[in-house]
Length: 222
Ligand code: AMP
Image (cartoon, rainbow, N blue to C red; front, side, top):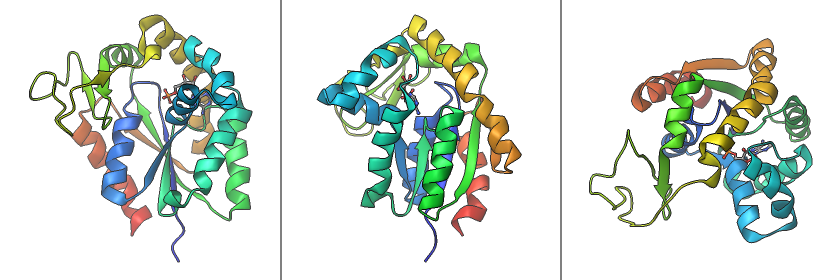
């Protein structure tokens, strides 16, 4: 039986990890595992992990590795992850990358590829500060770059309620960017050294990024 494909999407907030992960899900039947989504769910549910994560998330800092690993491992074990997974927003530190390597070794699995979505900081701030999404289906929109075809109505599901992430505010966003450069960007060299890294210029439009992604996926999904 073919091993499930394990992919990592690396990139600063606003690089388009979530958008591309959703497209990969549709096209290849993989499951997006976003630690940010899992932590937001834990915060909303008021679980012990959520309560512990809340302060760091509100400040734009990183949640401690122990909590992140516990929420992720639970989901990796779930049957929905059998075809393969896209890790979106994980790992974010070298400690998490090493913990992931150990976890995969225990499961006799390997990383297929680590895709680095590269954008410049100012463009990232522009993208993130205007984004919002449909509260029902999660389809993403932007104040300046992507509107629903009919104002106030989601193109994807017809929903009329939209939401913005509280940590997309400019000051929190700058903290998230600082955390990315200090703690996550070193993973680019780490995975490059292992021959696993593929870089994509994520300043291109969504379709071009998707094409670049398809070229990376071709040898993985045959
Ligand atoms: P994201 O949705 O990926 O932008 O994540 C939102 C927030 O959740 C981040 O700013 C962090 O506070 C927290 N977070 C998500 N993933 C991780 C992770 N792998 N390690 C630590 N904190 C995380």
